[in-house]
Image (cartoon, rainbow over all chains, first blue to last red; front, side, top):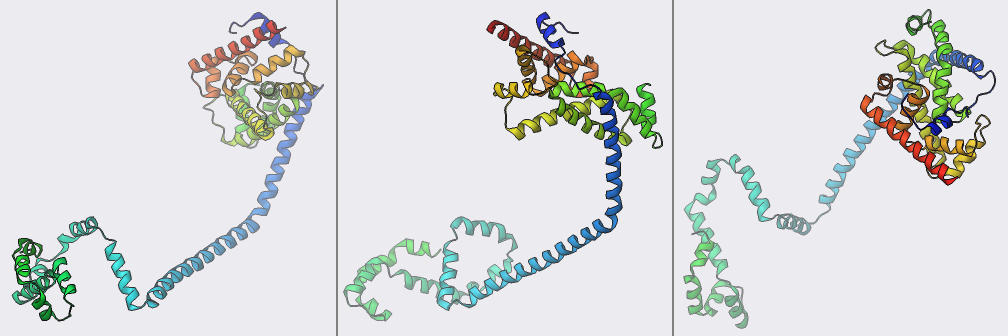
Length: 195
Length: 183
């Protein structure tokens, strides 16, 4: 035995824990009785198990599968109906606004990322054989853009001051020639058009 | 009857009951005292040891002779005792380290505990040890198991077991000094 303080050893060796008289004989008897009862209980449970347990398990599994099937169906239909009703109830203006909002929410990074991911899927024929490969279409596009570009802040102010008209020709007559010439000479216009 | 003979009887379905009776006759007293020192109270020890023997009976068909019989039995008894202690203190929400008065009252109410105030304090010091140290101290001091045997029961290295025993003995000695100085 490992060395331990003598006083402590005396204290530890004192028989402070007692048991009732004849306890160990009864303990053996009780233990063996427990086993007999335990075995009996197990046998009883086993006899009951085949019919009741299997029936219960089968019913529970069937009920679970049925419930899951109807729940999934209901959820799918519910989702589909909600989306259809939402768009069907929108006016054209609302739809336009919705689309504009969606487009406006895209950042340059989103667009750039999309192009990076999808540019490989583009067919070169689609790129070069588009309507923009037609010279007349390009002219039209540039002219149209130019037409819009001349209306910068100064020009528009001039138009407002001189009691505007929606007719382009009349508008151009009211614009100061020098101002218009100066604006057209500005190289950034053509840079903006990609020329 | 040797452990090997008991096991041979227990592993044979036709002689299992006879083997189990022999096992109970040989080990019920030893296991009771191990459990009693772990849980202290006689009624608690009685419940725990009976649960142990039910587990032993149920585990007999799966018993592998790789471990010695007493090693297997001690492991079951020790684990059951620890589980019982933890459950009991969790149920009653009493921290044994903090509530000395409650502990003393409980021990004094046990008709199968004979001890003066110093013995109560000593028992409290033992019960306040961490689970592992308490297991090691009881197995080593009272059950007189060798470290190799304790290693097989607890699955802890001999070095760690020696350290645990040393710590436990020092804590109890410190308690003794404090108590005696106080008196």
